[in-house]
Amino acid sequence: MLFAVVSGPRRNVPAVAVVLSALGLVLLLSSGAPARAAVPSCRVGAYVAAIYDVDPGHNAFSARLDVWSLCPRADLDPIPNMLFSNGYEPAKSNPVTTTSKGVYRHLTVVDGKFRQGWNLKDFPFDRHDIDIVFTSSRDDSQFRFEADDRNSAYDSGTSVPGWKVTGMRLAVLDHRFVTNFGDPTLPPGSGIGYSRLNVRISLERDVAFTLFWQLISPIVMVFVITSLTFLLSDPNANFFQSRLGVLGASVFTVLLSMNKVDASLPPDSGLNLIDELHLLVLGYVLLGVCIAVAGWLMVVRGYAEATIRRLSRAGFVSGMVGCAGGGVLLTLVTASGY
Image 1 (cartoon, rainbow, N blue to C red):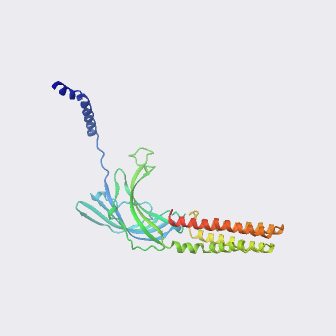
Image 2 (cartoon, one colour):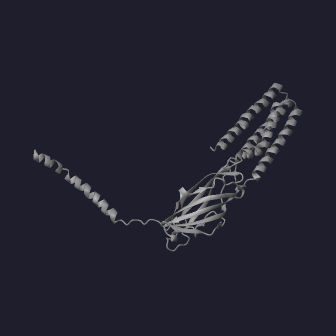
Image 3 (spheres, rainbow, N blue to C red):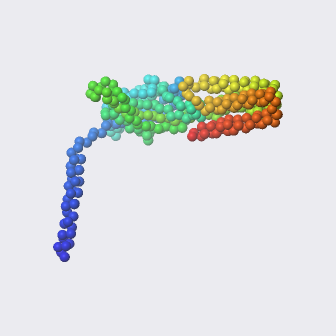
């Protein structure tokens, strides 16, 4: 009995020994591998004091912000040689530097103009994220940014004519260039990476609905006049000829209004909400032209008055559903941000 108790566990000894040996080998190999040195870094933050000269027409905006770095050593400070990747040589104020509790702090004010691409597809209900991009002067093997999110903010009381600031955040990015800029220490044809810090500010138009009604008021009048040409139909040739004259003037009004809107935006901004509404109304007017021509031909060929009136009513109903319904739905979807 004693032999059975003792000899039972001994049958498991080889398996346990194998497991322990494997674990020991893994630990031995891992301890022998050289540890990768941590890349030096500094925390960098920003306080956006002002946004001004917002100019989508020239793909630019201007800003003034306080920028600081918190580093374990002064020689790591990125601010003196930091690049503004989308800036038009913004100015920096005289630095304020302090050392406290083993942390070197550098504070400066940055003020200048920055390049920015604008997506005006939802104009005038457009919302934008505009960026101020800082790039380290040292590659990512020598330095990396860390975002000082807890201390970064924007002035909620800042006034931006025509716009309002809705938020701000920092983002650290790794930007890889496809060239090594001729660095002889790197393999020919290899790329090189640099750490970037994006100060991203969210904007939306402050007077969107007011501007919207100002821009669509001409085509609203055209829509009403075109609808009246359907409802006030008189089945005789002279009436249809007069109707064609009114519709021709409506086409000219829509095109003139559309050109005025496009002239206030960048030439490469693409189709926006106001353009789409103009095109809907233009389609409604052209439908009216087609109905007027068809009605005139039906009068000339002696069709019954009831048939001609039914044609006008059918054009009115289809136009209201397609133009008015489509325009309202398109506006609601765009204004809600979907």
